[in-house]
Amino acid sequence: MAAKRPAWTKGRGRLGVLTPVIGKWKAKAESPMGPVACSRVFARVLGDNYVQLTAVWDFAGKSYEENALFGAGDEGELAFWSFTSDGKHSTGKLTGVADVHPEAFGFEAQMPAGLARMIYWPDETEGFHWAVEAKTKKGWSRFTEHHYRKA
Image 1 (spheres, one colour):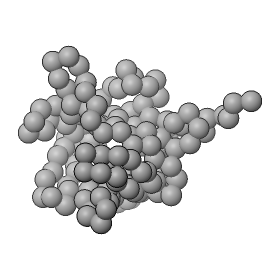
Image 2 (cartoon, helix red, strand yellow):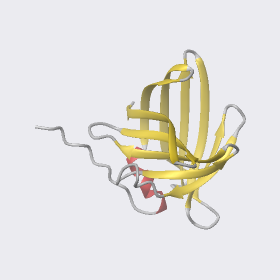
Image 3 (cartoon, helix red, strand yellow):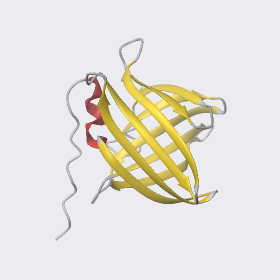
Image 4 (cartoon, one colour):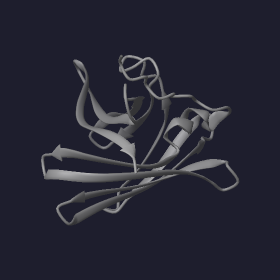
């Protein structure tokens, strides 16, 4: 008998799409810089008006960090504001990503190199997948994907 996929249940309200990823997560992956271990912690903060992401990538002893907030943007849509340890920052907003998975949610951001999106979707047995893609003339091109499991 096949294992039943854990529930990927979205919550209520503007922040409800983030409900499935609230908690502590870890992943290991290969990257152009070699093996990487990643952790992501999503927590409700500031009176439940925002979700804070604290992410750490560890490349054989060298770390890269990100702090982000998800909440209502200026026009009321779900948005994010991200700040990284290399001094960069980005902002983006919720976008449709059903082309990746019917239960996926994602965010688009205009970056110096062009339009990018990050996507979250449930794994069929444990945790979730996270990917980053860049918009090209031929469509979306994935350059990072991790499988996160509960930490």
